[in-house]
Structure formats: structure tokens, C-alpha cells
Length: 286
Image 1 (cartoon, one colour):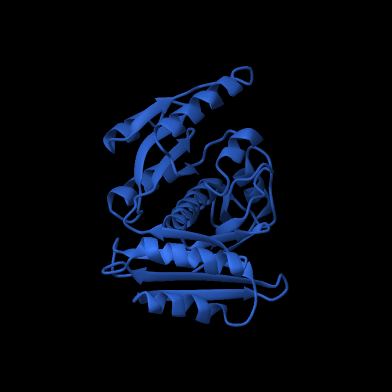
Image 2 (spheres, one colour):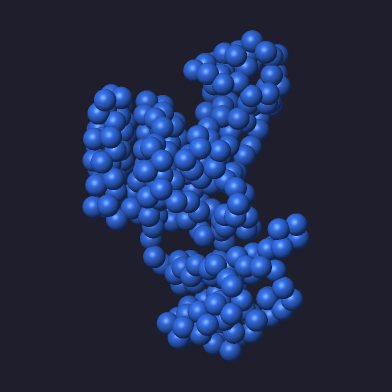
């Protein structure tokens, strides 16, 4: 993370790999007098792709002129790119059901300044998160629904997201499946977390099944949401060891701890513009 706080710009690039890409980008920045604070790149030789993230100080830097010149270079080199100013604060909506551990963690980290965003609203199909939302001063929207009223509820959710100018949606243990139409409105802008047991246990009571099987590792996966359930590009994963002394309650507690950590890291990296998706994979820059 740069020490310059919000006075920096970040450029993310993804393009076919060829010689001299780093030189063309850095020399253009240099010509505009950029003081580069961080640069990182990655080549996927198999896919023939190049990825880069550059961060530089914006003081005395003419961003619009640079953007116009860079656009021409990007077109010539067939680049997909994003340019962000770190002073712009992304607006995040959190969706939650009854398990509040991930939500509490995100709200606390945002208030403590760890997450570079504002959280204008919280949407839930249960009322259990209302007190927590009120404590953190976040607008709470209780939208319960049944299978018959799901489409209606989604329309209401989308309207709220639109009205609040939301940039990112975080599913903090939201136990409902979003429709493909909903997901299509926010491509690579919905982050979810779920347990990832080794070996995998599906169903409503994975911790009990894992306990019965005597697993030694449990984990969590943070990923972008796509139309295919739990199959989007993975941003972060972690595991924790389990011993024969651990009971079901211990597995659940350890699982919740790791879900919180994985989700908050995934959200933080997205907000800091460190992630590039390609195919069904991600590049996560340091």
C-alpha cells in the first residue's frame, strides 16, 4: 500500500504479451513527470497475456492529458485498462442474512479506516442485522421475500443500489442465490465468501458433516459472483487446522473466523484496485 494515501492514481492493464510493454507504459508516465510509488507485473505465458498495476503520486500531475495520450497507446497495444484515483471513495452495499460475523467485521474495519469505502446501505432478508446497522449508522433495508416474491424483492434491491450509486456489493453470508439478471448488472462487482472444506461437504450442515468425517483442515474462499453458483474467479482462500479435540462448535467458530478474514481481504484488495480478472481466474497484485 502506498504511503501517499489518497493522492495517488492506479493504472491496471491487461493485454496480449509482447516485448517492451513495461517500457512503453513507464516511459509515458515518466514523460508526464510521474513519481511512481509502486509497480508490479505478471505474465501468463500459457495464455500469452500481460498484466500490470502501477501507482503514482498525483501531485503536479496532469491526469486528463495523460489519460488522452495513454488511450492512444492502449488502443495500439490492444489493452484492457482501468484508471483510478485513490481519493475517490467506492460505495459499498452489504447483503446479509442471519449470520452476522462477516458483517460485524466489515463494519468495524470500515469504521477503523482499514477499508477504503463508504457503506451507505445494508440489505437483508432478516431483521437480525438491524441493531448492528443502526450502531454503525448504516441505513438498513429489511426486504423479506418468498420464492413467489423473489423477482419483486430483487427489483427493489436493484432500485436501492441504483439510488445509492453503489460500486460494489458484498455478500456477507447472504444465504440467497442472486438471479443471473442481477449478477449481470454488476459484473466483477459482487464478492461472496463461502466455506471450502477439504474434502468438500455440501448441504445445510457442512460443519457437522466435516466433524463426522474427522477433517484436519477447514477453509474459506472469497470470490467474485458469476451466474454459476460459487464458481466465480477466486480472490482469496485460507485454511485453519483442526484437531481431534475440536468439537462441532469449535469447527464453526474457527470457520467463522477464517470467513471473516478471507472476505475482508478480498474486499480490501478490490477497493485498492489490486485485482484483475481473466478467464475464470484472478491476478491479485501485492
